Length: 131
Image (cartoon, rainbow, N blue to C red; front, side):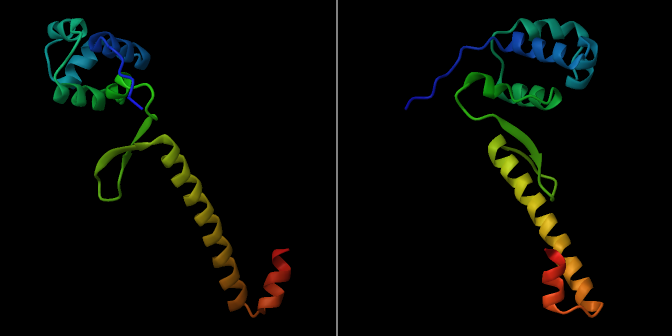
């Protein structure tokens, strides 16, 4: 199956995101490190260098590359424990969160069982207590 690729006017997409965030063009210019007068040029461009678009995506917390391929599953920005940033599919992210919550619950139950055992309860008494 071929991937459907949209034609996207990148400048308009950037401007739309700036408005969604309630950010001023001055704020965007400052975060992007360009003079305010150059913002209009960026917003008029139908295309832009990928490195620049990556930087703008980070500034505006929006993956503009997804706009080109609407059939792809949306992704969410994540940071690993060692500080690396990347993107994972939203469904995978939600699965990871659900599994994390299940592990937290199981961990709490195990801690309670250990505490009960340290307080002299037998395995049968602990199992009875859990029901």
